[in-house]
Image (cartoon, rainbow, N blue to C red; front, side, top):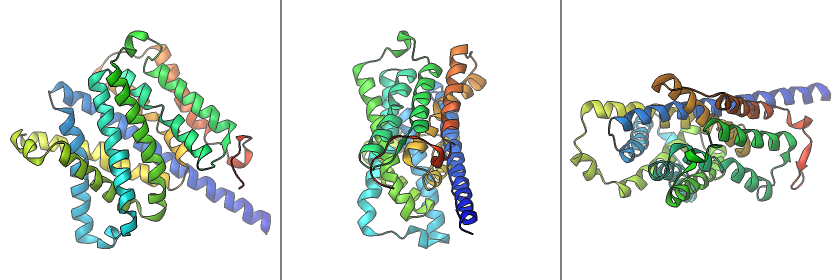
Length: 316
């Protein structure tokens, strides 16, 4: 009976991990698609700040109204967790969004993506050294493959694409730190609360932050049309509401290191969707970069019990 029970337990764990990877992949894909949508809006002279602010605020208001009316129990949290919600919402969610767009404004997309996606390395180092998460040869290889893939996919090998001000690079690095905080600090919240509870309060914290950055009065004075607000709502749905539901759901089943490596699908999807929607061409090297990122995600599927540990921090 024991071998059968053990095998069944491994199958259940494998199923949960697969579900986690799929959820994170869907979230990253939606973020990648929303990047193309954002580029289209920028071409229409829409201020990036209003896009970042409204997509968070609209998602928060929709969830708050619905659950406040239909399922109030979802809104119950412990007061001792309020600081952590604000920490993840402001330093994680709002920070990664704000600094990423600030980096694009000061430099360019290629530089911003390359520097921001040093986040998987930060998370891996923190998880291994501080949280005593085992670093395996497959996880290490996946990290290397994903970083290499991003460099190739965004054209990081071309020095001309990496021209950017020091301020732009600093903003992109801050975005990487914020995204790392989101993954690491957000994990305990997803284990204690439902996806909906976590998402509502993290979005609420980010919304409060944006009110100080760009006041409601400034938004009113901008006189955005009904069509603009319809677009803002659409962007909020595909770039915040749906992807963060999937991302927080994924964090319930896999470690932050695996989650953030899987999220490197985002720039790949962004490049492919921009190619399909906005036109242009993908070079052979970019295609190789896409393959590298996909290979990195494939390496993460190796069963932990079959992995050879590179670094083991602490006992199981």
